Image (cartoon, rainbow, N blue to C red; front, side):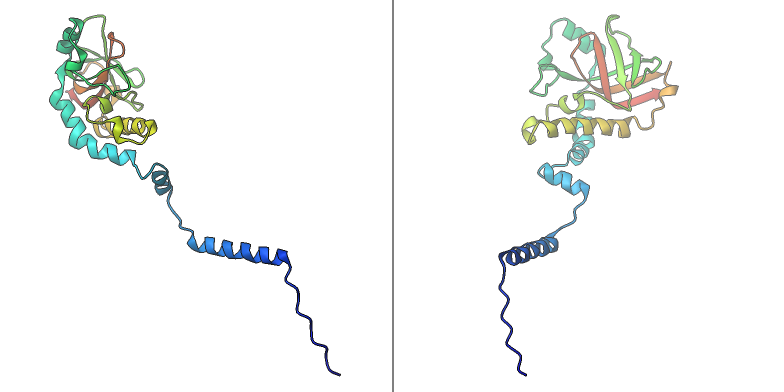
Length: 215
C-alpha cells in the first residue's frame, strides 16, 4: 500500500526568530576578545595610563627640576613675608590660586605623628610649622604642579589630571621614602628637598623628592 506523500511543514514566525537569535549569538561568541582589567581601564580612559605617565616624567624630569630649582626654605619664607611675588618662585596648577614651591632645608626631626614628620629649621619664623610628609599617605598636588611642566591641557579630563598627581605621590612613597624608618628619625638631622603648596602661610608641608638622614 503506497504511502501518501507528507505535507511540507509550515515555517512558523517564531522559528525564524529563534534561528536569527542563534545566528547572532554564535557570531558574537566567535568575535569575543578576552581583555585584562588593565586593558579595559586603559580603553575606558582612551588608552591613557596615569601610572606610566608619572613614571616617565618623575625621575627624568620632575624630580631633577625640583632639585635644580629648590630655594632655601628660610630665604623663601623671608622673601614671601616681605611681599615678594609668589609667581617669581613657584607655579600653580592653573585651576588654583595657591602656588607650589620647590624648597630645600636642613633641620632636626621631631617625633613622627602618623604620616607627618615635624622638623625644626633654623631661620624659619617661630609661628611657621615645617613638616615633611613621610607616608604612607601623601596628600596634595605639589609634585605635579611645582615645575609648571604638567599642564591640564595634556589630559582628557580632571580625573586624569588628579590621578597623575596621585601616581607621582605614589612614586615618592616608593622611590624616595621606601627605605626611611619613621621610628628612627626623632632627634636626627635631616636634609630635605621637595615641594609644598602654600595654602596657609603658617604651614609648610613638604612632599620630598630627596630625603637624607645624617647619622
